[in-house]
Image 1 (cartoon, rainbow, N blue to C red):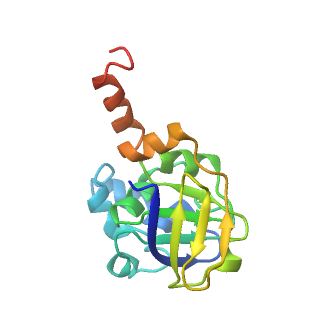
Image 2 (cartoon, rainbow, N blue to C red):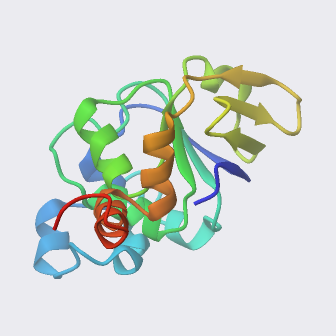
Length: 176
């Protein structure tokens, strides 16, 4: 994962419940896709845009409003969004469960008040996780967010919590 990223904005307004972000939990579970990000990627955001998985490009961003990821504590939407190639989610607000699930699966989620005031569909963005800045490359508008602490950046660099712990274990930094 890059700490400084560039990509296209996919703007979704309204409440984004975890179930509309990846389809029904029961359907996904029945298909046996719970652990495979690349397989889940074809279900990313289909509840709000059925063609999203075919349009999104690796490195693009999802931009949302309030309470992104509210609802059940399912982690398959985070895996699906990451599996579709999305670099990060930028939103006005999220909830603790979705935030932790995203970070644990290596998907940066950025709470950034005012993001919808400077970004519209298709804008090219630059996001710097360490500096805590989002820049709209077309308009030049910038907005700040709380930078990610180094330990979270390391976890994201590793691809999430479990790969990070595996690296730490292999390096002898935590006991086996």
